[in-house]
Amino acid sequence: DWPTFRDCDDCPEMVVIAPGTFLFGRGADRVGSGRHPMVQVTIDRPYALGRYEITIGEWNLCVAAGRCDDVEDDLRPDPGPEYPRGLVGWRGANEYAAWLSEVTGQSYGLPSATEWEWAVRNDQPHRWSWGERPTDARANLGLDEIIGIVPVGRYPPNINGLHDVDGNVSEFVLDCYTEDDSLIPTDGSPYMPETCKDRVTMGRHYWGTPMESLGLIGWHGFWTGLNDGNSRGAIGFRLARELTDEEVAALPTFYRIGEP
Image 1: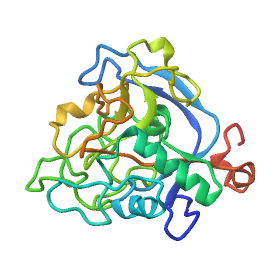
Image 2: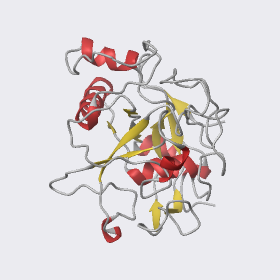
Image 3: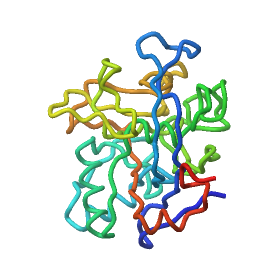
């Protein structure tokens, strides 16, 4: 069981992620390695991450409030409210996070790449969140008769109770893409230079090949060439939320690093 919560009836369900230390990035033992060595990262405070990718239904509440743009879908099959929301870009994802923060009085935003990867695999060395081999029994990977996105939560969760971290749609994170490993923060924060050409996405989407999942500074996929306003149907997002000091103090000892 994982500690979960919602800040309102229509808010995304959030899962609490324990802090820890792990190796972020592609190592020599991983397919597709060679450009980025692994970087040791320590996340010293628990945080929350969405159990699912933000759905069309959740996005439409922001549209109804006049804070997010309506999106004309060209995806097949015609997506319903339980499908992940793509086609909004990095900027749109941040606009949704800002609206949700105002509605709830809490601090929502896109996760950093290191927060995302830690929640997906902790320090497991696997290429996929479940192991070494791709399988359509665990994620929407385009390996079976399904062509297109599917409703969130259709496949089993990962070790931290998160669904669809492999497959369905890739996910924007806060970071700007860099090939300079010395710039990757080691404290769980995002790499956010003053100007950014390429935004990072994490996770596999439904129409890439299995080998394309081994991309980013981790073993998950990335796109470059996406600026703040670019959007694609195969890229969505899930949100992180900061936990208050009172919320952290109420967690089991396991979620407070440095305590026995």
